[in-house]
Length: 95
Image (cartoon, rainbow, N blue to C red; front, top):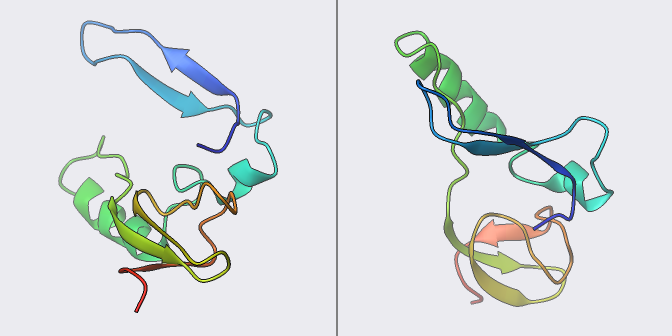
């Protein structure tokens, strides 16, 4: 979504393959990517979960969003592909 470089982690005996952003490969839009900057509430929930499941990772929540800047309705991660940020998006459709 954000156009930033990703690092591929191949499948190992203990986990499935996965991707993550590289620290030095973030684009300007990558600074707002929900995978790079999860919401504060999500971080708090993950920290509580990690007390019981130490390897738990944040999950980006998918929902219906409305971008106040470009008036675009979309579904998925909080990241408007028109504005290339999630900063102006709020949950729910246009009213």
